[in-house]
Image (tube, rainbow, N blue to C red; front, side, top):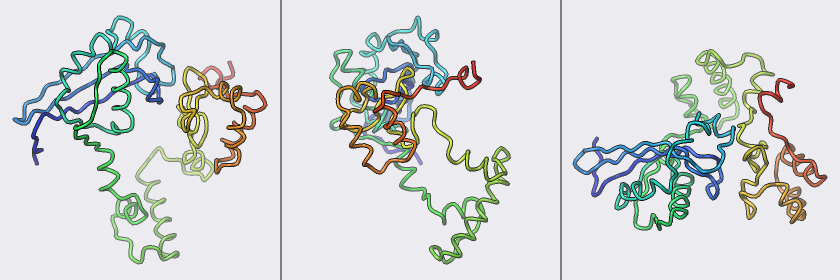
Length: 266
């Protein structure tokens, strides 16, 4: 079905230097502008962020400092980007909480006032979450090609869960077969984050807050300026791993990001 457009719809995606929408800089921007008559216009460029690209970010998108050395800064392309998307509605994947705030901040640094007021925003991630259920019945249907009868009957639920796990091990050849390795697989850490609860993230090898009033601030800086905040965190419902990071920080011991060399014992 063709989209019914009243004005152009600009799909866009950003690759950036980090997770903090206030400090992250764009290293690549792609735009697909869809016009009401069905015509399309594309824009793609690497961007020099004017700050070092952390290795943790490079591991995600594959763009390193050398790649952007001779590329334009966002300031240099800001006007072109603005002219391309002004008077457009916007679409993307997780753009409402991530891409749009970063783009707005980049425009602000370039002296351009860009606002989404009056702009329709379509986030396909939101549609995915709303339309595709992620409950036991949906998993049973997906993996076992059967409908789960008497859902929320404890015995039926655990029988279905067992069938799902068997089907998963058959579907995914690379899925571990031992319980110990399955445990590791289910609890693996996203290496962009410091802790299991994702309360802290890595930025240039330094742990930063990922929530609350100190979001974007280095952990060490907050310990020095407001240790009481860390004490407050210890009384919250965080995992043992996150609590241990907080306790160590209060003792002046801060997490060190593992690299390939440290993992290999170099």
